[in-house]
View (cartoon, rainbow, N blue to C red):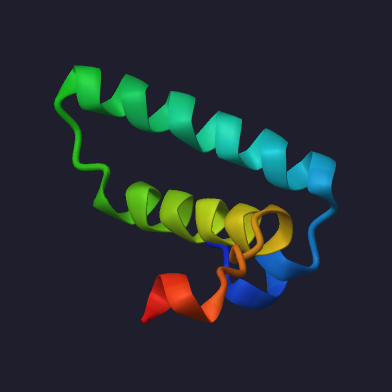
Amino acid sequence: MILDTDTISSMSNQALFSMISNKKQTIEGLQAKGTDTKDMEIEFCYLVRERQRRFYRKKSYPASVID
């Protein structure tokens, strides 16, 4: 199953976390067998990015810290 950004963004949180876990286990298993996992790793990165987008907000720092 190939995931696109629209599919990933429409997933529920539970489905997102489940998919991240499944992809990670699949990648580890395929790497142990010596199989190419590039496409799976790309999808995994998209899933992790969506998790970051949903749950991690950029911290706001005072202007004096940034300057």
